[in-house]
Length: 95
Image 1 (spheres, rainbow, N blue to C red):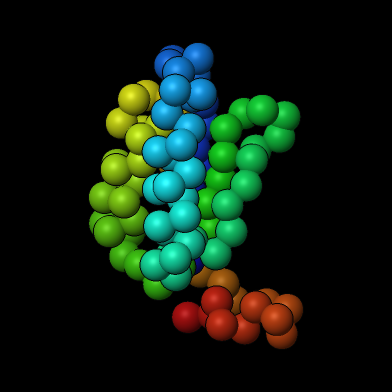
Image 2: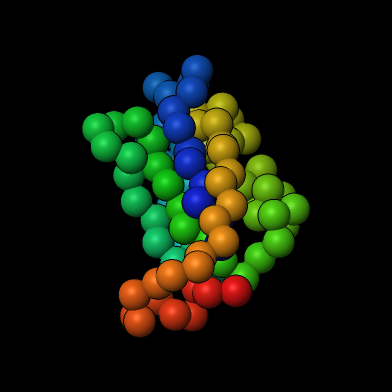
């Protein structure tokens, strides 16, 4: 399981210009079953994605296609988590 942090970078001002394409990219990740949760990093620092069922290399390739990454609106950082203990509702995340 991975957490991808999409922190605003040098070209943050261009976010509105690429928002529709970024939202389509997010929707595809959810529709593909890769993104379980997508949300904002508060206060206004960017976004975060919880991803599963994908290799690190494939996730990095997917992140590289995010219009916000392509246009330097955000910089992506990936953190891998190996769940050991979960609430019963999240058992499916255990490896």
